[in-house]
Image 1 (spheres, helix red, strand yellow):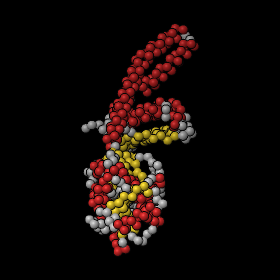
Image 2: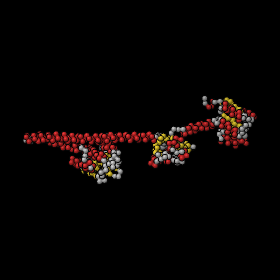
Image 3: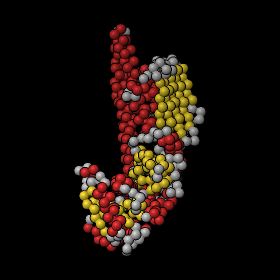
Image 4: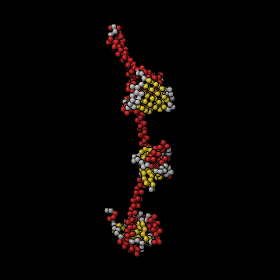
Length: 483
């Protein structure tokens, strides 16, 4: 049923029979849908009635036999706080009537100064106004309950000054500040200095009306100066008639810490696998090199001796000469192959000499301008495994250049600073599409060795623009010898 169809129950609190008679007559003359008019003539009688019934409106005379003035209104309003009250007063009490409105009355009427039309208007206005005020009260109580009893940390802050205006108990617990301490702080006090630039950009977006609906993780600091990670969603709200921002924060420090720990364990496991693969590769290289040198090469050498003997007996057969040439070529190929496979003598001659030997081999098979700069590099305090990885990286990339780059220039730079070891391999060849070549085994092998020692690799290349690989390794425990 709609409100317009409800029959009103009106309570008249009046101890003057003549005034009551006039007022009741006016009520029935209005066009309001009145179902019942209840009447009491004292505060005590009114208390008894209100305990049993709930009228839609109270018309209250301030002058009662057992209560008068402001006291009458305050007592009844406290007894029935949700029922609209219209105060009935004489001309001399108009000022007091105004005060009752300031204390919660919906309207006042001066006796003898209103008719049924004004009375009807006042009743409808008072009921509607009380209904709206009650809705506001309920909304505020609901908001207050959601704010203060929310399991998430919530704080409201001024968009212009960034000063914190209100916080709930969870925010106090999460950050360690009391409410008074919170209200004396701004957003900047909750963030470390390295987050200031990001906060400034976000505030600029807010002032331009750009608000993200998605939550994001911010790095904050609590009262103890500890770093905490808060997942925050922020929304504009009206706070006491002024635009403000409400931030709802969830402490995800434990989750972030766990994720980082899992990532560290994953990287460590990946490094262990990579290290095992590299050790296995070096062993395989050594075994294959020894097998070729000690077995295959020996057999080919014996075959050469038989051919030489046959040539003497048969007077230099052309087929025997050709066979000897093929075998000699095979022996040279195997020697070259075993040299690449065998672990370089870095322990005896050093990394720089080993790299120079790579360039000597390149110079023997291909005409190319080559440069090698290592003036700032020294290696006495560097672990052998790291130097071997540097050697293999250079060896891998040089082989790539010889096979695919069609280059006329090759430059290798090896340097060292107080905190890093730097390596660059540069050529002027045909280059390649990095997005496609990243999947190649050569780049993969290089990247794996770089990651094993926490290095960073930057590859600059494009079709017909050469290739430059820059690698930076931090000087750390895994690279330097333990003393």
